[in-house]
Image (cartoon, rainbow, N blue to C red):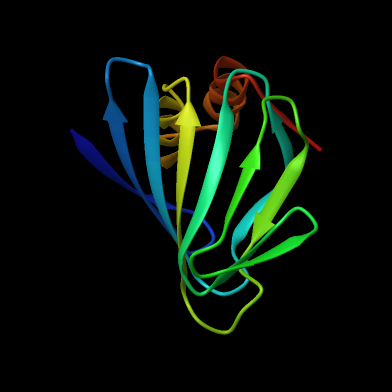
Length: 126
């Protein structure tokens, strides 16, 4: 099953939930300049695979075909610093992170509901 989310800042996310919470695969399309600020995941590790363009993940600039693994708890950010669209897969283990994106992509989302989604997802920003 897959879902498509249009996110603020020019990002489109396709989430595929696999094997009942064991794994979530997120395909993220990022316009130039879009990304996520520094944060950490307390529940899952992420592996990032750049499919198109380039993506700065933490201190590393990943080109098409390159990967980075981000263990649970590691602070990181990511941004498309290029002039063209970037696409990447984010493989999250265990699954469930798609619930966060579903909540924040809801047009009726409020500051309170976004804060609750962040807490529920075990994300730490800043």
